[in-house]
Image 1 (tube, rainbow, N blue to C red):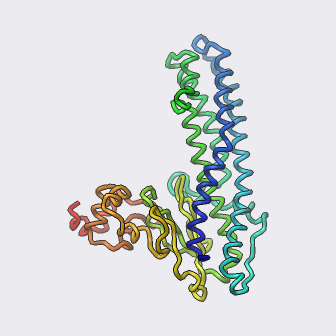
Image 2 (cartoon, rainbow, N blue to C red):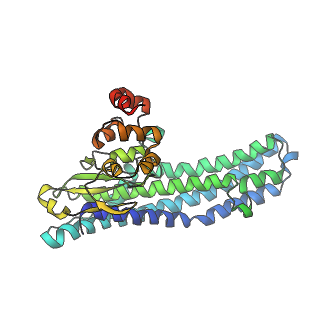
Length: 355
């Protein structure tokens, strides 16, 4: 079935696999970090160094580490452009498959230059302290942050009286534990977060550029969240919401966001969405189901897992519709509300639920 929600839902699965594949390409960089730290530090007996000589060693180490982390982010930035160009083309082909062959409508694909420019100037929709951050600034910051964090871990070890061997082990970990017991393991997790978040943004921005070129056939775009227990509070409530192109948030709304978007066709093309489906943990379901409509059909244990026991109790026993419960979870800037903030808005529902 060629309809917007079905295509977007299935493409989101592909995109998650792409994120995993892209991150795996960068494993050699973490090997370089481990090797560089071991070589730089084992050449000196850190515990015997004066503070002045320590700082000289740390400056040399920091530059070496920065060269490695910058190599990672430079390669990632290049790949983001390629991904963006691919995603814009994919979206144009998807629209063509829905409308072009059947109705003879010409679909416009944005140029590569447009995609490059959009990736440079359109900020991430992430809320909180990173609100409004540009894609390449986020990627570049990782380079400096991780080089500094690893260098600072060496300095900390020195002032806590650790030996060179202990400091190296702390930073690089041990092979028998898969290097998971190390400071670099945190660097690796941070890199995966940056990679997944950046790819989500590149995809969303590129596809949005395609919609901007074809607004004569669109009424906007629809937020499509993942139907499972891991979906965030923000994405659960954004699911199904429709925005005008260029006038709403785009995934990622938070780090590692798995949500996607789908074009909202004009009313005269609504027949194309008859029988549309979307992916869920149990297979494909009716595309018109919002996250909370779908959740109401799930077992109580699953609802408890997805929402947490207290919020699930409100969902199950508070007498709120799926739509009102969705609205209750976010403020006007799509930031999550706490239970106490929700209580102030719907005190009777909390009372009815016995919370």
